[in-house]
Image (cartoon, rainbow, N blue to C red; front, side):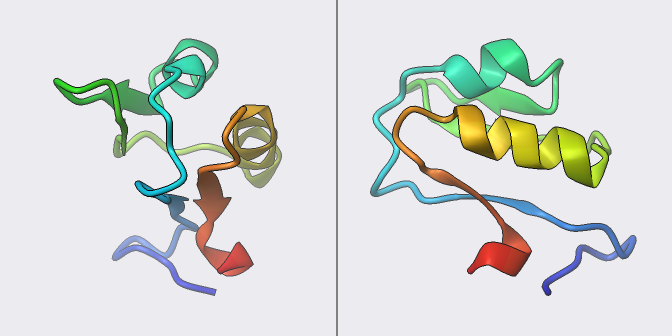
Length: 70
């Protein structure tokens, strides 16, 4: 499982699969922001594993992954 420097799981964006719906930014409570083209950029906010899993499951393009899923 990949972890960031603080030892927390990372949300990874598959930029090829992403279709820039923006759903992740709306439902994430600030954990995901959108770049100028509408693609997600994970922020440094900490999510519980359950919150991260729920966010990943709500992506309509299945473009969000937990680093351990890769």
